[in-house]
Every structure is written in C-alpha cells, then in structure tokens.
Length: 178
Image (cartoon, rainbow, N blue to C red; front, side):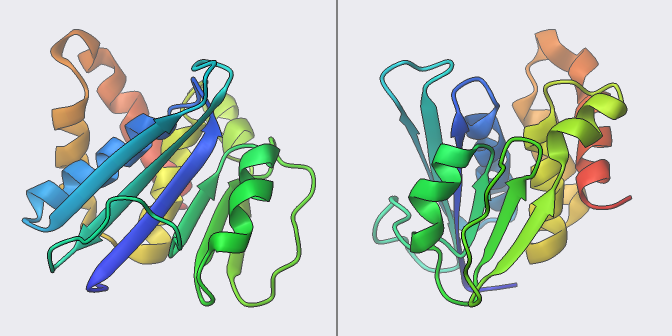
C-alpha cells in the first residue's frame, strides 16, 4: 500500500461521483488513515460537472485539493479532457468507455477503459457505473482490503436505502473483475 494515494473522480452531477469518493474516504477512516474528501460541483449540480478529490495518507495531509492525482476516474468526456493532463507520470486513468469516445494519448500513465455503464445496465444495476469503476480502482490500487470497502459501503448506505446494499456489492465485484 502506498504511503499516500491521491484520487480524483470526475463526471456529470448525478453519476454518483461524490458517493464513490465518500466510499474511498470512509474506507480510509476505517483503516485509521489520514483522509480528506473534497467535493466540487459545477453550477448546475445534476447534469453539470462534479468532481471529488480524495487523499488517503499515513501522514498528515497538507492540502485536500488533488492537483496531481495518482488515479483519475473519469465518467465523461469533458472530465477526461480536463484532468488527464494532471495525472502524475506512472499514474492510472480509469474511464467509462461507454461515456467517453476519445481518449487522449499519454504513454506515461496506465489507461484502463471499462464499459462501466454497460456492465452495470447488463447486470440490472442501472445507475451504479460509479461503483463498478470504484471496484476497478480497488483492484488496481489495493487502497484497502475488500472487507474494509464493504464496511465503508455498509456505513455509507443509509438505513432507508438498505435495499441498495446488495446491488452496490455486485457492482463493486463487477468492476473488480469478479
């Protein structure tokens, strides 16, 4: 596990960007790590842009804003275009290939194209492409144990929405390749 992991998640409002970021932060909290979770919304909210900076660290975090992400999760073309240049060399870009037509060339980062929207819909998990992508982030980075992420999910799904716990678990598994 890295000493520090900086993740930037970005997409349209309503795609669950902030929820996915919250799950990473919650997992860090459970693991006793230093965390920051900084949501950012475009002016339109749902349908506008949304992004979320998450830092997990074993040391105190200087700034909650992720300017040079180790991992970029992009759920739409404008987000990929805006942030791909900021990913650190050696970093990872995980994108929803259903929502993104053109992938800019970068030979110093790992680019993973995952048809997250289609995978979610085909599995009867419409609206959970964000969690499918998060499953892939876990697989690629190992930012926490799978059990820890499941605990984070249990804490983050409100009592009124407990029926969504199992679909979210399936979406995580789908993204992790299982």
